[in-house]
Image (cartoon, rainbow, N blue to C red; front, side, top):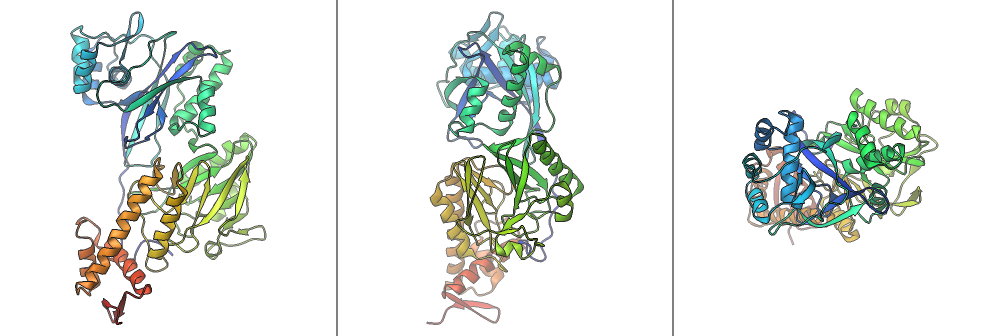
Length: 509
């Protein structure tokens, strides 16, 4: 059964726009080799709060103008990205690159750039701010996966200074509140033990740098020069968390999502479990196969497939997937009811556990969105299926969903206080408490509003929906009636209301 109500036509979703961006991998000499600067993003940031990231930002219109007018920059995408990066250096860490190396920017000059980024170009052009482009080299180009309405193609520039000054926070508001220098191996180990949270593209970049350093006998300049000759820009693992690879597969799902997040869990070289391989299209199946083959090339083996629930945007073409790999299916009885079974399959129940590479995963039954829906939790976070998403919404189908159970399941996840939430659609949730509380507050308010409508004598479902959704005038008419029915049925099960023919009334005492 689909979660989408009858009569709802899935709109064609345009491909997300892709914006250019730039990030700085700045290194210095350290006791244990070259160290990279990591910046801690403040908890109020809308994206990746409390993550450790590289300085950088998006390329603007005036960065492109700067690239065309400043002689030290090339008048192309690389030049515009470098202009953006040098501007962000001033704003975020108080540096500029001079003929003598990295130096502090005068506080007044820095404030001018922070107040209006376009001032960077004018200050450099007029000689009020140095901007030496020598030493910067692109070591990787990464495009973010199709998980959100906005995507970025990020150019990662390397710059080495043997002994740069310590970065300095601006006097006003800042994206960052702390700085840390670490070798690539130290950073990767801190991420692997969950001591630091680092955005996915930077994890695979760290792995690339470590590999290049090993080939260059620890010489960071040689290692990054080799990388810059052919910057790795192709397909990489999307590592949302330690031992968790995300494989976004194109599916026919509820907009604005266009993909379902399949997860490959377990360490490379060890046993793996594949969660929600939803691939049905040729492109999706080919992508899944590439990720499985990449894991197998490192000695890994898939020991099971887990489905979080039985909706069709989570279960792929099992016949064609079995040609990619073969493994038993682990799922709840409700999910198994729509899947062909074999002798090695396993029925999952609440409280079951399994261990991969020393990490124990716990099965949590979280019904409401769908009977038999499960989540998988461990110390790194929760693979949460269709419980909550960062972009869009979650439907509770009136046919086989249950609003009360859904709210209870949300409360259960919230009580676990996970460090991150790994949803089936869209980007990860870095602050699950905030997301889950928003869902609970929103759904409880809507639940009360539906009951208020009936108490006020409104009996026809479309009018109840209009009343309950008067704060959301752009809500799709079919979806809001569908969700209103889910709320009404929950109130009916609780004995608060009753349905007489097609009219909804308060229950007779």
